[in-house]
Length: 240
Length: 240
DNA sequence: CTTCTACGGTATGAAAAAATACCAATGAAG
DNA sequence: CTTCATTGGTATTTTTTCATACCGTAGAAG
Image: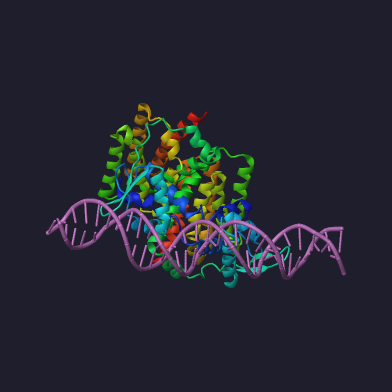
């Protein structure tokens, strides 16, 4: 077997230290709106268990996010770590900085990865027969993103995309899609949300859902590919 | 956003301790034949850097694999950790034990995940124009697996599948496919490699390559889906 | 106003992991 | 045979992470 494949298997077992990874994870959960402004994070004890780290390490991460102004930590019963973060005005993030931070090669990698896992997820979801609750969930998420206020658009768009992966019932796949999304969050936040783009995206979202509900794997994968290619092209356009 | 999505983002940042993860990773590299019988692992110093761990931790992992009989460690210049592992006779592994070790739910998760990422990789590879070297690589891997001796079949099959992901140029995607494969290795090693199955697989491998080279994303994804569904069905059959 | 209790805050010791430096062996090259 | 570079082997110290126990606070419930 070639050395190239050795790299895929003998890659790092550890992305970084526990503290830094935890900060990054929590920050992304905040920026993605998984825990919206004003809401509370799970308690330190619960969160430490979910993240698989000690409470001490988690507290260090929370403290740094508090000092950075992302969290308001209150003690006592009914206290906790409350999110203080309003999504940036679309288009006002620093795109160049975000790209420089990750590198052009990493960007291509992230976009390719996202394309693969999201297409795969949609394709799979189209092959299984969904029960009524699952269909309702998918349609609700679609309706929410279509009715979203500009400030909530990214958050609900994220929720829609993640729902597709989660409905497959595969935690591994859901995690992969979440990871893929995280890698392009800063970039997406930095580009404007324009009316025509939203309308276009709405059409594509509808096409994705239709193909999934119709049990058309090829169509679902193609619809997701077209949709993601659109945002990828938008990103590349703003860079050139 | 729903709590279900919270789980995808606030999942563990650490899969386990560094030692155990390293043992697992090295063991899979050996079982997959990435480093074949008689070959040498990279030096401890190099390997520690690649795996992102300290040499101390790596040595503990190597030591346990040595004690388990997978490695022959020799010191001095031109020494190193040499692989001592001959692939098991197909069909003689303990399938029930392998399944019990991971659980039925985990198995379904792993199969779904693999389906998604490999379909996605093939789909993407079919959309890019490959240069002659890349086409040659793909065809060579196809020829190798078709000409494989039974003892080498799994190894070359793995190499073929991983090549598709690697040719996309996305390390993230390659890592995801490698990870997906790792999760079903023990299971695949436990089922027999029968003549009809090999012939069938060869046809499907050919179809995958043809679709990729023809620039047919839908066809490539469909071909991979059919192929993987075959092995998945085989696995389920042996379980029932 | 008192109580109860779920939360964050703090302290301490153990264990895991890392960083660094140095020792020992091997075998090809000269 | 001698040299010497490359490899595994060992020891030491520091940093990170974890486990555990306990303290302080706030706010709803009575």
